[in-house]
Length: 162
Image (tube, rainbow, N blue to C red):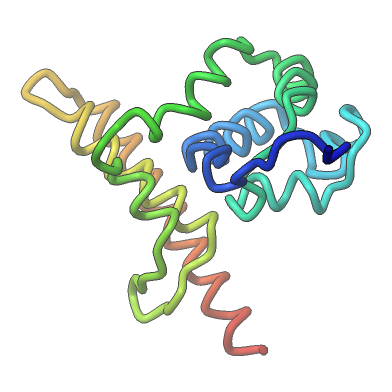
């Protein structure tokens, strides 16, 4: 008998890309660096970075609990976000944007930061901008677009320097 337990298909345990987005947004909202969050949950900044970039797709349950506590997120909400895409038959626009390469303004293969920012803009336009939106909504959208351009400028400079 195999002492390592039952064989597990890691693809079946893959979490939603929305989890990556939620973790990054929560970390940034708290003002934590990757290192600060990593120290709080006794892991590496590289591991947190891979989670946020959706390169690490099957964290342990203990990581869920530690992230939930450190970022003051509801554990059930976090778990729901992690499995949400598995239940859906179609992918969200956010997931499509995060999981695929594309270019914006001549910047090829935009960074995860640009993808997240762009996904937030699309979400705001599609889900929050309606006939009841006001000046504040447009101001917020403008600020999001300005931030996207800053990120794209930075991405373009990095690629030129490489």
